[in-house]
Amino acid sequence: MTLFDTVAGRRLGAAWTVTTGTFDPYAMDDPMPALAFTADGSLLRVIGHDGTFQDLPADPARAVPAACERAGRRLTQEEWREHVGADLDYQEVCPA
View (spheres, rainbow, N blue to C red):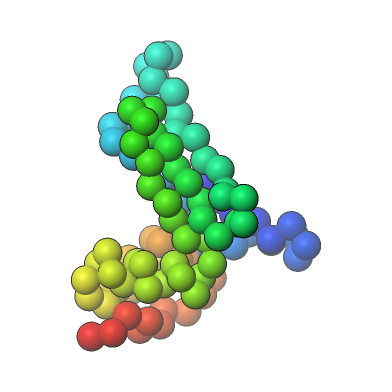
């Protein structure tokens, strides 16, 4: 998945691979995950082919603490490039 700033006409960060559970892109009866923003635009809901779902914060001010909480530590520079992108310099955004 890739997010774009449609006003500025530029990509926002790196592309993400978004999935829940297992997924076989070559299986005709194994549909891709569904993606939708909540009505208020604060969350991106990812619904897997198996019915499981995950809510991801769309606001960077909420996404950063959520990423730090999941990691349970500071992000490495490699993780930063993978999840944030190379267009933003590495920052230590998670508490030690």
